[in-house]
Amino acid sequence: NIAKAHGGVSVSGGVGERTHEGNDLYMEMKESKVINEQNIGESKVALVYGQMNEPPGARMRVGSTALTMAEYFRDVNKQDVLLFIDNIFRFVQAGSEVSALLGRMPSAVGYQPTLGTE
Image (spheres, rainbow, N blue to C red):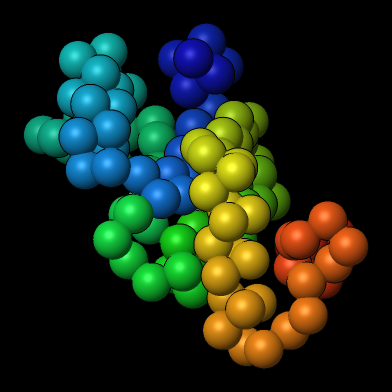
């Protein structure tokens, strides 16, 4: 883990996660001492979740939120950052749902027309 090896921070964006998946990741990070519940300031991770049962707009914003957090740690705190987004398909799916709700025509392959810039 980059947080342990380099003194950096890990940022995890869980798009459309199930509750038990987020809990399992949290518990693993707690056991490996990446998360310190006694002194949260010493923790080496930021977790952002948009669960499966949430509206597509909330799920879609998780990726951008995680990216913004990672940029903050990199630019302001001058830390090494490991950013991971799970699951990129669910991110695209949420974007497609938002696009449909806004009445946008899908691209030739069925995705939202804004996918290239998201």
